[in-house]
Length: 236
Image (cartoon, rainbow, N blue to C red):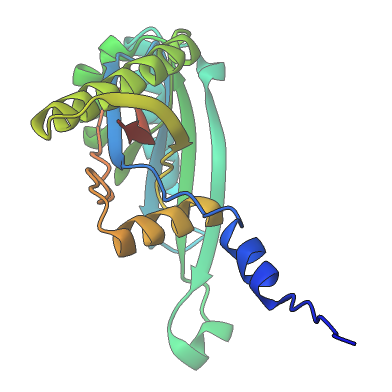
């Protein structure tokens, strides 16, 4: 009697050979798109700081400077209710003797709401001449701010697409679909999934553009509106 044995090892090898092969990552290009615009403020606040080193019982200088400040506002046609006391602080000095010493350092900060920013050029020197130690511009406002932000998003994405198109043509390829898009926010870390893509692209030798964080440019009397987006495009 003859016996026949069936070996399944070749079938196992055949099944393994038919397993799906992982597809390689598509060729991609990472591009940063930017758009920026400056707006004239329609309204802003001034923080006006006065510092004193006088005896608290002799506050004549304090009163004189307050009167001078009110006079400046009156000449500029600014209503008195636009000026409010923002902060008042006092600190003693003189080491151990300050327990018996009435001399203190006083700091007073006023907030002035200015609805006519065009007055700044004449108002700033007048405030300093009236005794202000520091004048700081804050809370610049413009009613078109949100509209401009939305417009800049479109412009930033378009800017990124133009850069990616040039890069693709330079390598004799065509630009494909957007694979990812993320807003670049100053002083904030990248999302973990995007950070892993950056790392993977670096290991794979994939090209990238504009991955260096850009410094924010400060402005003094204008509202700087900026949109920055990182986009990953497929290259065919």
